[in-house]
Length: 113
Image (cartoon, rainbow, N blue to C red):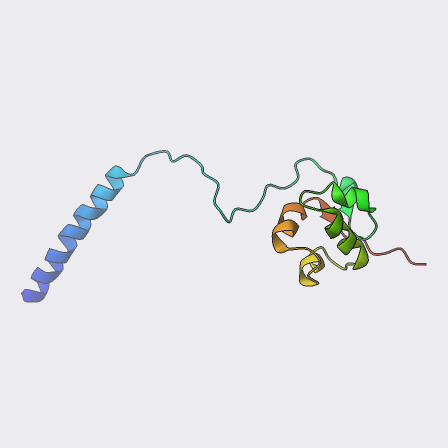
């Protein structure tokens, strides 16, 4: 009997707490951006207008968000890239900068000579 009584004593407050929490929850919560939310993709930019980091000139690279003249020089100096992620893995640009430009760039294989 003691076992049954202890379960009842624990279950009743838990049930009351759950009911109170459910009643206090608003029906509609406003959407708030999360700190780790993925940045919105580039809306309506066709693949043909993405900047190719393997062939773009310095001025085109500098139009990307967060790319300074120094970073543009670094990108050019470390070409060619097999993938966009190589910009970070080769420590050419910081991860935060890469995350802000990854939707605007592409990597095309270098032209054969």
